[in-house]
Image 1: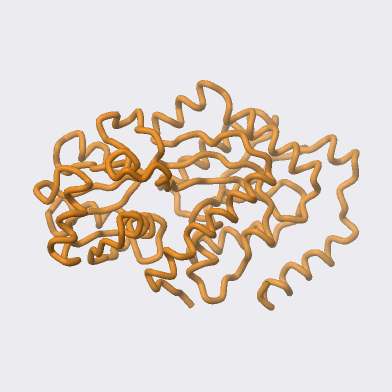
Image 2 (image 1 turned 60 degrees about the horizontal axis):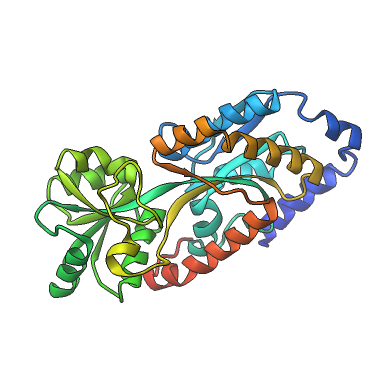
Length: 328
């Protein structure tokens, strides 16, 4: 734990020594609206997912769950917002792969520890990641990788920025395929990268399936493979990476979770977990999520989600190290 974060957490804990949650208070929880901090701007895929979950969770809890977008510092602003809040269950963060697995690996001096400072409430689901190529460069994923080998890394792989999840997803594919090299071209967001792909200025991108689906269906680009273990119902014609490369365990997805401060009373976490799982397991809600390109998460306890986060960090650590991405 960094000195800055130790001071922050220690000071907050001391201030709350006399504000313990009693059993009676826990039994009445929640008595007022809750908030779900989304550490990304409004309008994006994670924000839309978080708002869907917030609406359903509010229905289960009998209190509104209000979404607040707190952006900046690769998600750290939103994470710290919840870390500074009272550990009373009323403040949650809608984090995920970027804030919980990637952030502590790419920052030299992380401002929070997603494992030590936060306790998962529930894994919510995951946006399917896919690999897309411009027309003319390849008709399938083996063809793209073969062409990349042939031209010795001169094919251009676009991303929304160095160290972003989909950038690393692309690097993970190249690593799993035996160390294939492509030239990384970072952009300021997914939109500009897709515009240049459509214009033929780059050769491929990694993205979420929803971002590229319409362009694929219109024949403007070619979606080569999805990184899930099963084909997506949104694009059943697109094979999985596992199918076309013979990598049965290859899977990567932009997963999301709800989390609270680690020192939140267990009884409150249990209440939030039960309500979240009930919301996520509703048949109509699962259909709604899949229609948006999101695969609902399997039932996992908060402790199991914590183990999943640690496993994801271990999975991405060598990929991040190989890219050399490091931020101050």
